[in-house]
Length: 260
Image (cartoon, rainbow, N blue to C red; front, side, top):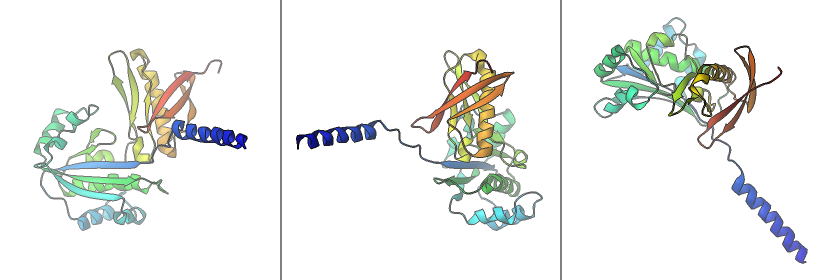
């Protein structure tokens, strides 16, 4: 029966090796969020916000309004007196480039309304993509707020910039000691991994940004990021391969396709 011992040992070793070396599937996370900076220390009443949303031209329909009762929606008031550092997002997030006028508005704000939609499971539709920007607009309009921060896309906006909904993923160049890399901000709103390239030289910045931008827009529209895709840019064809790491970031390798 010695052969049974060896079979068991081999099988056990193989199973153990599989558990040790396998890569866990990244946890799904969809997060969309806006901070609506307000000059006062109170939010507009929810019933007034709802009335504004259903009456304002091109705001929301009854289909989106149902999300007001969704447990994944969270609206809260954050006071400056207790969280002063959150009123300088340009210092917290390096990608935020605040103008002098925006800094003045941040200085005047006494609170902000945090509007967030968070899901750890895939969602069946994209109603929230229209709903959340309009909720932020309603609170800003009724609360005399003129500045909104998008912490997922790391950008400051005026309420008017959300009339047509969220602008989609933000593609940015991140400089490093030698060269830099291109990364996305905002794909998390679709439950998709953010993209980051391997280090590249500075003179590749624009073509790589164009490639990543096309891939990011396609992922935003479809809600999926394939493991590999092809992109045409600057009269050339490129293959982009992705490997999602433990931080749920899709590391991109870009290859020029020869003879295409």
